[in-house]
Length: 384
Image 1: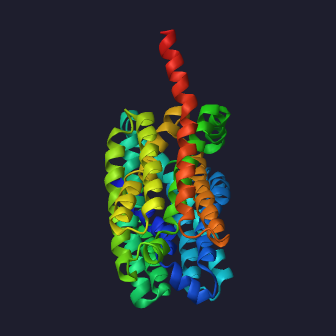
Image 2 (image 1 turned 180 degrees about the horizontal axis):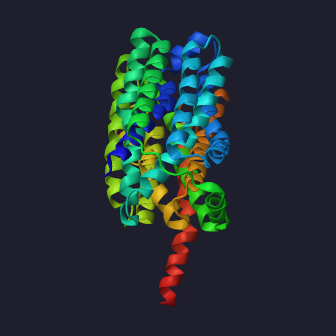
Image 3 (image 1 turned 90 degrees about the vertical axis):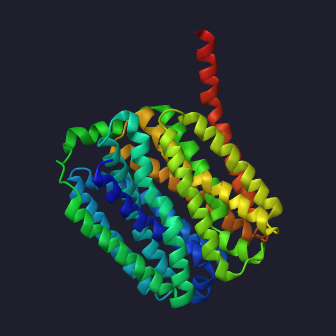
């Protein structure tokens, strides 16, 4: 793989560490801002919502300039938002910080995935995307547990400053290593919009939304579930999150290796496992070993299905930046739906088990969303 793909992975690692870090410090943030745990869950929702709404708009603005300059602009915007989060003096300021960082993150995903796909042959797109998205998975293995540990030992503000430093370093490496590719121009910008007429593209977007929605319904509340239901100590939470993150890395590697050849089969099997794991966790959350098995299975599927989801989109409509940014928006719409439904269920008095049941329901809907594709395949086979 070209070196620049690994540079892009580091940028994604830096930004997604910021996205997920709130999940590991929910009690600390709730105490600092005098709000409920469910309100802190909405900070995850805010990040995701800004990715959904702001990312495509920012991408459209940046499409006419060189990819390197666009990436540097996004790094600067993200750094400003992360710094504001570190300085946040109340809940409202933290919410603004999450909106800024979420908007920049979405556009970065679109550009990074498109660049990685354009640097390799079509038969290696899934693997190239999996390398970039390894930054996402490693953020769960290293970034999330480390920021959780820093928050517990040195305070949550120090965690935000640490991530701001990561983003700054990513910007320096991009300035140094990323070639300055030509700007696409107006004609190519219009071509970016043509694939959105393809209904199969929208079907792929819906499946991706449901996969991530199901995952984040549970993941957004893993920390309080671990401590309040499963009976783990707060000090063991970073280790548990590391186990989950390690599973996502393994899942990403395996799925990235086979995503180009077995795209739809991987999505179907992954959703089956995700559904089963969420059901298992909801039923047996009070038992520690069941909780551990469940989070490992969720890690092996869930967000690890991203290479297969991205490959399906690119097989359907090409590897344009706008296509991938909108896909990123739909993925994060899943985060919005999952974390919001989980927060609403908890606020409604249904307890910490409820996000896991919601995750199972969304995974089941994801399976149903694949049925039209498989019915079409069966019909085509019969005609042959």
